Image 1 (cartoon, one colour):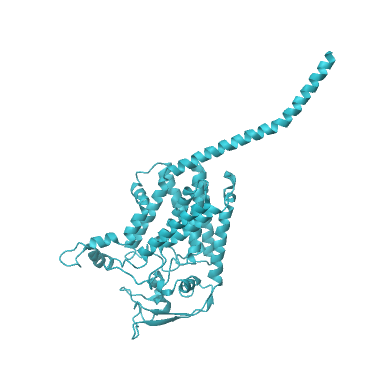
Image 2: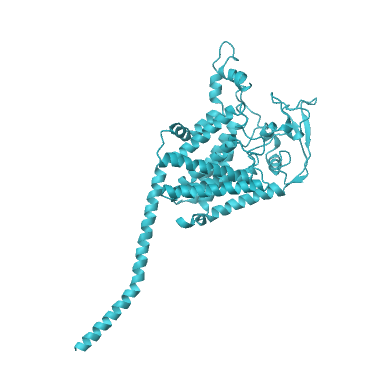
Length: 450
């Protein structure tokens, strides 16, 4: 009997051991599931905290962008070194547009940091928002408001400018929003961040491939245009001058025969392009102080050109997607050190790649928004954002940047006031005895022209 009990106990212990071996993996799996759920809940809490509060450094970054825009717009004519580079090269003004696109991308990551419930609805809202921004840009920069030298308004719809700063931001915003809403992503893993958003980088590669293919592969034939705006001193009897530009090339990156200009002339129409391109400040154009071109200037100096054109909007959209990746780091990493390390790594990588491409022959050109320009300026925006994040959000120097933060929170309103010249027009409304004796006229005649 005792031997039977001992055998029974032995069999019972063996069965319990086997059962425990079978059940243990299930228990471990259940514990792993609970641990994974806890990590997801903690991450969701962090995401909600980020979405519920404004990132002060991002507002400061926007404010800095607006501040630089105001400075280069009003002081660029008297200080050419800070105005846009005539063609190749980088001046202070050439960093403003990439900063706007970068900020738009970061903001998108914060807006869509939660799982999108209805992709179609989210896409529709993003497109509507972009269309509103596009229409506002046409109103502000299309030619309806004539500037500080005239109080008149109105524009011929046959010559209205269709693209501009806000239009470019709208295009980049919509492309980045579609990528964020529709492209799949992997589960967050700290050690494999770039792999989690591999489809976003595939979109970047796709856009850059189209840009390179059209820039270097599109044949640009000879073309003609009418000088309707009397920029030339040679004007025919009917008030217009026909200019011929000799091209018949592929892959030219000069002002006259690049593929970007040809695409804009074909799709938008030459009358809807920017009528006073910055390349007129090149030495070849020999422009005088009163804005007139000499008779010896090449024919392309008289032609309009759109610096925010269709082809260059591809790489501008890439810049917005890059800002989106910086926003992912902000929303999905909790520690300041991890965020700064990832941002710094990406910025250095972009800066090195853009510099190498420039050395290999791809010029840094804002008007064409070349890949080297896009990478270098995106890196500069990333480094600037890192510095502001360190100063404002880490060290708490928020009071020092209060003015820039306020400008960032009201960036669109300030942009409208500056671009539409409403402040300038209001100041022109007050004069002494004659309309010419107003503050703006005095500044233009005594300060800017000197």
